[in-house]
Image (cartoon, rainbow, N blue to C red):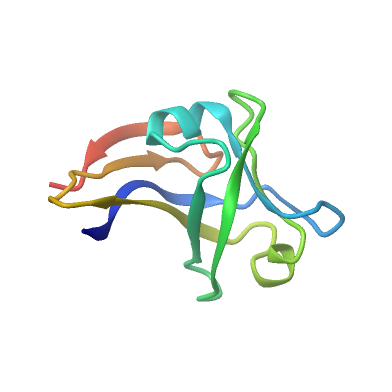
Length: 116
């Protein structure tokens, strides 16, 4: 068994950073669904802007809002307006063809594809 990439939201823009929240990343519910992520799922978040990498968990934001909010301590590492990639992984005994959600600068889905 190996942990393999199962979903990715590619080049999203952080719309908010909220230090006063207890933790996690808030993601537009539409993007959660399109990527095949689960609420509460552990994700890796990588900033293309700063190079910061962190693990947190998904909480749902308003559908269609484009929200991508770093909450709690994560807001110290990844800030508003940074470009990020959000990745979910699964434990599998065979290769998984990950879903990739491409978004525009307002975090609206422009295309859903697979890794290969």
